[in-house]
Length: 178
Image 1 (cartoon, rainbow, N blue to C red):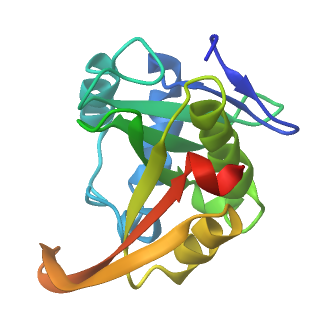
Image 2: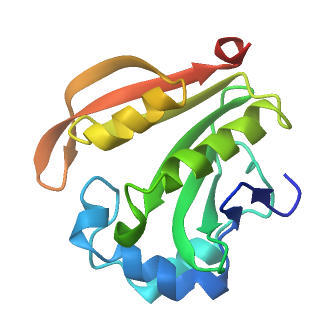
């Protein structure tokens, strides 16, 4: 990745301090936090810590995470894509969050699709994965639309926010894209 990935409607680049207020605003909602690993009490200090700890490269180094900001044509932050370089060679894990006011408008599909394309194209990925809360039907449909295969469900495998939840595993291989 050069400094950013461009799509028809978005610029995708590493999250910076300039994004902290908008990033915090959409993370600090019950709707956004529901299936995510943070609470709706997400604060500016939480954002500052995440931004300060970011690696400087895409993809991040082995076992590192990088948060990529999704900016629309006006420069507004509308969501983010998380990229994790796993300990397996050429294997990455992804996550996506879209601000509530921008959901169901194709933001996640366009941005996640562009990141997947960059990983398989420029970075020669072998495998890209996602693990999702099984209750989140929207993200399952999104991943299917991008060519991911549902590899299975681990039933009540995670004690998350006070309840047992099932986790869905998704993956797409370089060979799936040929």
